[in-house]
Image (cartoon, rainbow, N blue to C red; front, top):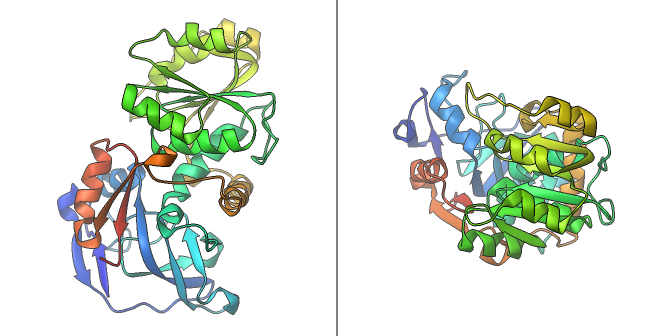
Length: 336
């Protein structure tokens, strides 16, 4: 079978397309015949900075495909099932950039027939991250489901990004009033397509003034992509509001107006889905799966998430595209 591997940390040039024997699943594992692999920023960052513990690594955490073998202790009913997978490569050498990979059975989720493999491969890290950001606040719901966010307002900073798109779709499905910030007209169209009720171009508008115009009392939850927005987030939070920051660079510092935030009893949270509590991830997987089953989440330009699809042999180009900030979701077609 074909697999993309890297044996040392480095740029996209360390990724090699090789032939490997088809692996047999061990206890608690399934073997997935991969349809699509989803590429996330953490995939290229990990490849760039961390040497593979096993001496080799297949990259990419997310994917979708069909289970074609199960190991000891795994329900045989999974055989032949369409599934999506999450955190396939976390602490393991088998990422999803290969024709067949081994995945813990606990990280495999059934994909309904009406959902495409492209959608399945786009779920994983972005949607679990978005779920965590939405549910961390003390006064926010702990679950995302129809009606749980009724009467609440969510501000998604960077509403056209992969996590931003996921947050918009999930929050809107749960009944929130969703505001999203973007950097231009094209991204504004994408955020609106995802379900944002109010879209604010931060390069052309005063975001704080616009938010306060729409929601005079402030927003309940901010899903935040950049610590540089801390002052803005502080200015638009409602009493008991929460900010969840899911991205940052090494050495970056965060400054907030302490007394103002104390007065609000505001909460500031920091999110890395890989090290989130198990119970939180289990709840996220369950809620995201329910949204997929309900047809409430979508991919493609019409859903605010354009797809860039490259063949397996061009996985390095896929990583470069994500690192370069390609708008939407980048997928690798493991069958091409």
